[in-house]
Amino acid sequence: MLVVRLLPPSDAICDQKGIIFSPLQGAIQYDWLNYGDMWTQGLKYRTPVNTSVSEETNEAWLELLTDVDLSVPEHVLDALGQKTDYRWRAHPSGGYAAKLGGFHQMACLNEIRQHVKADLDNPKRIEKRQIVDNCLELLRQKFMCDMDATPYLLKYDKKAVRGDVPDMDTLHKCRDYGKLRTLVQNSDHTKYV
Image (tube, rainbow, N blue to C red):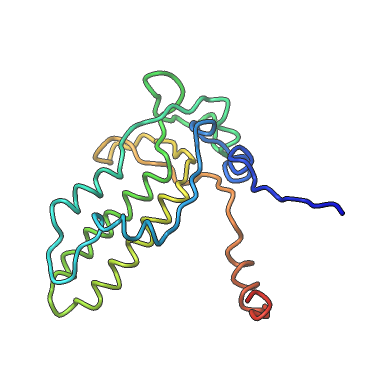
């Protein structure tokens, strides 16, 4: 009798399948995390009902963000689907300046959190605030779990406050959401129970 034990793929295999290129590709590590555990540990990111958002909550969110520019070498622009003849912002150590997509996404989520906070401080909106807080927490956990390590190159933009804007025209290897949705809608769910 032959017994086969299937092992989960290594971190390197996960990286190869999910990332086209990242300056951090060799350094990415994976942890097995239970979202339920993250939910209780994530209380510092959430605001209790019937209270205003605390300074501690705002500081905890700011700690999740980083504004560090990474260097992307010219020879990988093609792998990122980027033009080599474009005038990208240069990185001081060589190559081109870029931000990691996951940090940009987390910053966007933080902006949404701050935006809805003002409206949701109204006591008449407590139920809605609970729903929004839960959604924000779930998205924060997902963004941290599946951190997008794809670099967004920075384009010069005289109109931008910082003088540059992230180029959102980047390649990502993604799960086909439409096919997954269709599969779930058309499947016999009883066979998965």
